[in-house]
Length: 204
Image: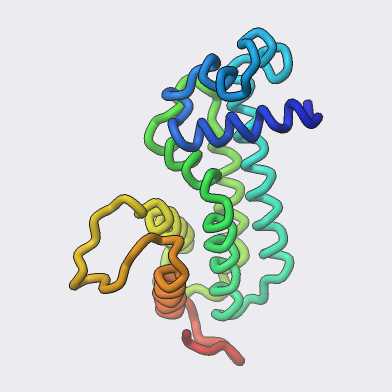
């Protein structure tokens, strides 16, 4: 369904779904934002559930592509695990709309639209399989993957959360360079404690 007009409509719908959630975004709102009648929107991209599925499909394709690139470069060492999750952090920091789409979904948004659970399981399994031989034996690999994922998602969506100055002096927003550097260093330290030392790997 991709041409310049439909591509624009999918991008527009993605921004609205990411900002307001599926349940908070009407077909008319999308059409009004695009400056076209609802009937024309439906003709071009389908009804709201169909358009949402297109948005999610684009999200999954972009995520899977980023993970595939990171896995292709993966080396089974502690530093390799750090680099792998660095790639995830960089992807979501660069594409916050994908992150907020998933956050809405996890909070029960679009409950009447077929889910993407199989995709999420597959992606999580890919990451778990890659790092399996580097993780400390007493660490559950599935929990590790989700712990890092939750940390990344929680950090990047914390822009409006109050933070005590004595706990995080100088904290502004997660997208402020120094704040992102600090979180990345924390993520590296966490992964260092959860993975095995390996030749050539350095604790960061």
